[in-house]
Amino acid sequence: MSMQYYQHFPVLSIMILFLGAFLVALFHKSRFMRTFITSVAVIGSFAMMIALIKPVMLNGEIITYWLGGRVPDGGYAIGIALEVDAVSLFFGILVSLAVLLSGLYSFRYTKQDDARDKFFTLYLMLAGGVMGIVLSGDLFNIYVMLEVMTFAAVALTAYRSWNPNAREAAFKYLVVGSIGSSSVLLGIALIYANCHTLNLAQISALAMSKMNPSMLLAFALLFVGFGTKAFMVPFHPIAADAHAAAPSSVSVLISGVFTKTGVYGIIRVCYFLFRTMGMPAVQTGVVLIGSVSMFLCVTMALNQHDFKRLLAFHSISQIGYILTSLGLCTALGIAGGLYHAINHTLFKGLLFLTAGAVLYSTGTTKLEKLGGLAKKMPQTAALFMIGAFSISGVPPFNGFVSKWMIYQATYEKAMETGSIGYALVTVLAVVTSVLTLASFVKVGQSVFFGEMPIEYQNVKETPASMLVPMWIMAGLCLATGLLPNLMFKYLLGPATGAVLNSPAYIDSAMGAGYAASQMPDMSLMADPVIVFAGAWKPLSWLLLFVIILAAVALASLMSKKRTSESGAVIDSKHDTFFGGEENTFSQVASGDLFWGFKHNMRKYLGFMSNAHNGITNEYVTWGVVDLAIIIVYCFIFI
Image (cartoon, rainbow, N blue to C red; front, side, top):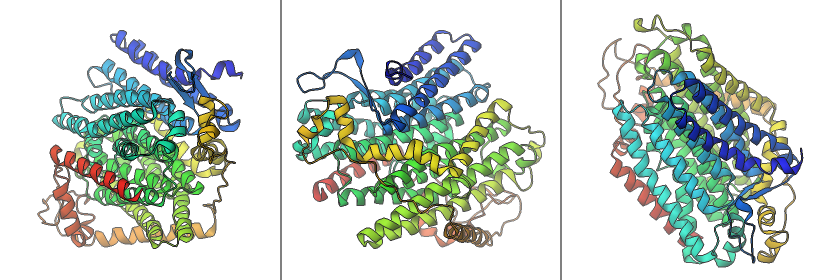
């Protein structure tokens, strides 16, 4: 394929989604046209991203597309550019794949909803906004797309407006999310005041020579702004509310797509714009935030009594894995974080779609009201098990390989630095995997196994149009686990190299030699060597056996304290709830399975219960305090 064709694919992949949103609104009365337009838009965008793998990933090209042909003049970038390197394409593929599969799922899933034309208009706007972020080479254009994405996500969260929880979740999403948007905008303003440009490549070339207090403040603001979009702690409570209220196909986008824009932004800010990730203070800070997000949210997931809220907290926990690995600033750590980003999009998307299937067939996602659905929905149950094994790191599914890479990367960092802190991160990552598996034992017992309530005797399997996208995701969970070498060749290797090689990106936009003229100490890097011990060695399986054994033992110990009789309401001061969820007893013990754990951790869980009280003002306070802490941290240690 010649350059004349694929150089236009980045802008077309964005335009087709926004044009689709406009046409869906225009032909809103025709169900056929709505389905046809949406299908063409999501398939076309995905196809163009796949078509760029050969030139960008394999041939190492960086595609720079100047809108209106306004190329740099007089040494300054005055136009808006789309610039696609291996990092941008990596996230573009993730975004377009998730949009495609969840969009196909949505056609039947939203059949019983009103205003479906508005749903797909907002859906395509959200998709277009995300694609615009990951493919844009202009910082202010990223902010514009960030706002388009955010408002579309808020509207989709409130889509089922008859549910008061949906309206409340959307309001929280909007208010708390405004902290992130405002931080990004202020950070951009400070950068422009210092660098007099908004082009990512030129900012990267000039930033280090113009570092001063205002630029350091800009770094902190951008980090917090994108961290908000990734729902890192302490911005995580709004994600749980949004996932619980939004349609499941939207949850796939919020979890697998929306959060990736935050991860992408953090990569661009830390590795590229300011190149601060090489500093020990930044590495420590990012790893700490990732580790806290990873562990705190998995413990909260154990206490949830709603299928989708539980998945929401697990989603944030998995984002913690990604941030932790990226914060190591090693080739293996970057590759492991990117690998887990792929896997998170797949297994978390699959799990949210299975939760949507349960809701579609039964009308509820409350764990205490469900049970025995594997008898009536065997395919959905099998798909859930694949997703649960994947997220828990059970081979041969994808989560095992990426988590193994993260374990190895954190351990090697501990050996390299002689820091016991990184060794503890390795232990924490393994413990989090154990708790993840334990919590999905709870979900499997509560939803798909055990005794079936009488009211669900006539439940039927999910329609085929919903099952097909789920099976595709399930197949990819297996394929990406069994074929790590292909993943390294076509995606992870090139993307990891691009993260560490900013001069190539700069020269592609500003002209050959520009990076060297502005950064004489920087030079083009050779492709990084990623030494991966391999997940399929006996030691790996031994570790897996220990993890599974520990998880089973933990689940067994936690369930010994069951004292209530069937149908009774639990009345225990050690039971906790988050976000207003009521904890009730179930015949399959969904509420009481981890009574022993909650008893032993009652002080911690009591504190978490009081902290996560659903009050928007307090969540905003958390965000403001976190922003202040990060700013102070940057000024002291960077």
